[in-house]
Image 1 (cartoon, rainbow, N blue to C red):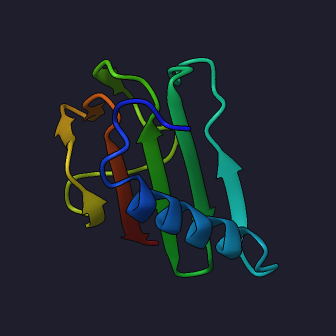
Image 2: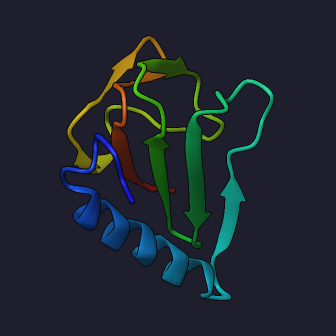
Length: 106
């Protein structure tokens, strides 16, 4: 049962399930964002193929968080989904319960 913040959760769950499907692809490498500098409230996952990188970031708290990404992400990359994210001098700012999906060509 969800209490508060559940508007749009169905779409978010669908997007997260796509990430889970991608993880099972043996040609992709994945990295969970677990570094000491990464806020505990952040769910972060990046998967990489030979030519591209996809990062999914979700702020699980109601508070804004600012953090330096564990992998190279910039405002010049292709933003797939974001309603509540911004970039500030190399850091990413996610509003409460905000999310970001970014694709980068590598």
